[in-house]
Length: 317
Image (tube, rainbow, N blue to C red; front, side, top):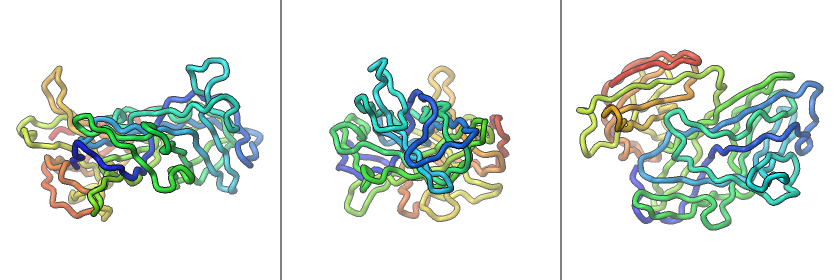
């Protein structure tokens, strides 16, 4: 999808990782700690689009709800001992708030940013995570289009309700858990009938101990000058590839194909995939894929690839 040089104000359902320093255990908001709390680490990754230079999102905190309805709220605050650092606080900031602004487009090809780094929480099952985003100011959450034009991004009700990930997860008593939240921008950029662009959330959470990657190269003959190359990854073997339109089969993730200047090879990497079989397919028409329409994309090199936990599977097109 191609975003023009001058963007209108867009709606933005977006989620982003940021580097924060954990700061001990938390009772949270209305939450009762267990006798044996656990440690939670969260990070964010993204399968990105080709049509913008930067997408910045600024978060001020997050909230988690356990299966018994108890909530733990965490806030990003200025470290009272060092104003250049940010800490995670279980109470509203007594020092100035220190929200973090991260460029989501930097998080692709297996890269990720830390959301919580070994933070001690009550153990048990958590039903959802809500991430709180700043959108009221200037250049807090915004997009920079190709060519350098930038536009503020808004989230309908986002300042009040945040961005919610409803899939649950467990924090073991006396142990640790580490998860990655995957946000696919290619599946989330939407062109409305009014000519505006918005981003709708397309999120999944995976256990970092159970995931692997698929990576490889694309033959240069498949990447002509007018091409917008991408790899689409579908859950299961023998899937007939299709565009992103919210109708099965939709890819579980996508991967950019980038030219490696040192080797001259076109490379891709699809990361944070749970163990199992996947169908991978190459398209040169990724820029034509509008998530809210049925687009006739041409795919080639379709193949079934098996992923194992903590392992990389190589597949070349």
